[in-house]
Structure formats: C-alpha cells, structure tokens
Length: 318
Image (cartoon, rainbow, N blue to C red; front, side, top):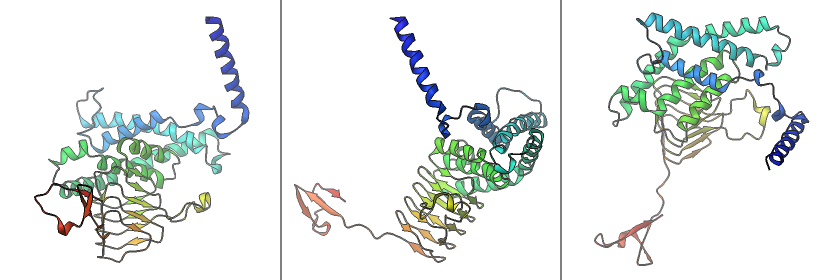
C-alpha cells in the first residue's frame, strides 16, 4: 500500500514539474528574484515602530536609551530594505544592464533617501491622529486611536509606501499597502496623494485609486470608492490621471462612489451616502440621494405610512 502511494506521489510530482516547463508567468521558480512578502511585512512593522515609538516597541530587545534603540532599528530596516529594493530594481527594464554593484548602490541611496522623509511622514501622521480624535466622539483618547483604529493604520502605511513610490521603488510600496488592505479592508494605492488631517471612519470597503489627489481635512466613511471611471484601456492608461481630485474640507459619507480623472470635488462639499458621481461638484455643494419611498406591511396588506396607527404592530418594507 505504501509503495503504491509513493508511486502515485512520484507520478504527481513529475506531472507538475512538466507543467512548470511551459514558460508562463506562473511557471517562474527563481524564488530569490522576487521580493519576500514576510520580510516586507517585517519592514513595515518596524517602520511603524519608528513612526510611533511608544506604541509599537519591539519587546525582543532592551535598550538603555532611545538613541541605541533607534540606531539598531534603523540599521536593521535599511539592511533588509536594501536587499528587497535590489531584487525589485532588477525587474525594471532600464536596469537590465546594470551590474550588481550598481544595483546595490542605487538601492542603498533609495533607502537612505526614504529615511530622510520620516520626519515629514510623522508630521502628517500627527495631523491624522488629531483629525480622527476631533472627528470621532466615540474615541476615548488618542492612544486608543493609534492602537485600535484601522483607518489610521491604513493611512500611516500608505504615507510610508507613498514616499517609496515617489522615489521610484517598484512593487514594495504596493506590497505594503496590500498587507494593510488585508488587515483593515481599506485599499489605498501607494500612488494616491493624501493631504494633512485625513480621517477614515470605520473604513471597511474603502478604495482609493492610484492617481487620486486628496486635500487637507478630508473625512471618508466606510464603503467609499474613489476610483477610475473605466479601466478598459488597460496598460494604455498607465500614467494617465484616472482617479478624482478631492479638495480641502470635503466629507464623503458611506457607500458613495466618485469616479473619473476629470472629476473634482470642490472645497467644503459634502457627498451623501450611496451617491454615484462621475462629474465635478462645485465647492460648498451638498450631494444627496432622495429618500426611497417606504411602504409598510401589516397582516399581508400594503398601506401608506400616513395611514399607520402608531399603536399597531408593523415593520418596514424597503
């Protein structure tokens, strides 16, 4: 019986190995030519340690002062980030003829340039914490926001990834934001530009596309899509502004969809729940969906709401 199972397994292995010979994208087996998802996730977590030093401390080590802790942390991140950037730079056509030394030098410069952006990222992140606390009466304090709120987590990861995106680092920024997406249900492309005081409330199901521009003091609720009007052009649309511009002080309520690269939501506008918008909205305008007609059902008969006796038993039919 055991010999039969071994023969079957050997046959299966041979079939799959043969299938690998078709030279398709999915047949690549050069494992060391692809970035490591676990390493990128570890880099992201350690960057969060740097952004929020009092909230995401690495408990594996003990240090006498912040200088020692931060030095070890940054050296660790830079070392691993250099390796991952070196791998992904090889996938850019313009680097095909680069020597390994040239690739490593460029990766190191990108890593160091990125770390120069950390103070700016932290400046913006502080405004996100303030916006969330000011905008949510359910928040106990700012500590709760940093430790618990998925919106702030997704925004912070995006701010880190966005700076890498601007430096021309491929793949890794998207890996970071997709890891945040899997944890929070909030999908923000690293190419999206987020202004200060950005507040995501609840957050589940939010989508923000690559070429989105969001101004300051913007509030977005769950289920909102800030997306492209059409992607039928596929790769021909690469580099084209496909996603909306949201100006300062805009509020977008749950379930709204705002689509198209030419769509601009003007300052101080309010977009109501479930609105579907493909054209620009002028500053200060409130967009809302007219309430649906409600019928009430009792004892299998339909009646108008105005005919209802409040003392009767009833329920809504939408």
